[in-house]
Image 1 (cartoon, rainbow, N blue to C red):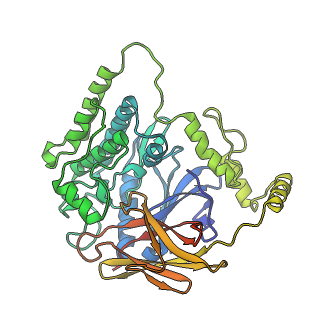
Image 2: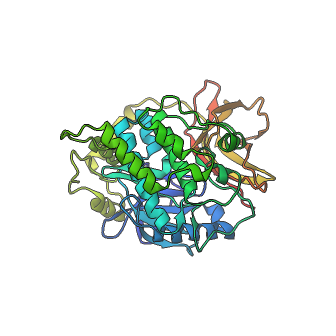
Image 3: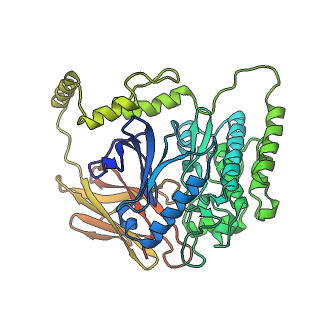
Length: 451
């Protein structure tokens, strides 16, 4: 889904004009951009606080090198990059479709034919990735984009290239706990079969709508990954054996991607009748239209399409509008002004004005600065996003627990395992609320160890 650029977001990265937000994670943000020729691209930049860290820069350089080596129908190809820039960035081909996490969130678990199509596409993706001598290392639902012609695997942020392993502390574990392999969770060396375990966890999520090893504190989830059994209740019997084989604790018990693809193909032949029929795509045209509609709401001139052909007011026109200063039709602007004038004044609710993060020991604190025009701010809340397992919490200022409350600010610690050998990143959506329970506009905060 394409979101609106925030005032603090850059408008130009390298030669690419940025026109919307595509997502964010613990290491960086991803934007929709257009080249001077109007070509849509996904531009990833690492967070400013990490750009000054030589280890994170080296890790990002490895990501770019790994992504450049991978080619194939089921990955997003690298278009451009600058790892030496003040804010390093990577541009890949734009994939027009929602992430798997969005699709399951909005539509529930996938059907059996869609699950098998997803499994086949992911097996082909891993074959291409591993053929390039790369282990992805962070395969998860938000890193799987659903295009009309099949899934695309993106984000090689913690990948390991055969001849260019990233520097780091011994035993360091970086990744997404819910979708790690047991060997990765234990800080052991990982190989291609680690990605197969993650593929099984992704399939389990797509089949049930749940993370197979539950949620909660990362250390608890990692313990389940290493020693516990996955929760697969509700997975269709047609795909359950495939998922169970991928989730074998011992890497030797997991199928190679080519063997998995053969098993998926055999299952498809048994499930899908041989008579001619029109196959439903994993992502429908209406879903793609919804993505474009979201960008249109942002004011970038992207047209909702009824088929696969965009009208003349597409990405090229969006680039032209951005270059021309975001021109807006005068009549639409007048209507907007009249509608705004007709609305009653909104009540004065708290407003977040800024955020900051800092590390103390194993903890990373997130700090929220806010204005309180109604003088009735009562507390704050947050919940994990982007595969973070943090449960929703609502905390009053009167009893903030581990939080530090000061005038106009709140700081709260979260355990990221800094320096423990089980380091991981988290993303939270946070807000301030008033005495009536009305919430400020939420912000997403990314937490990562910096030393």
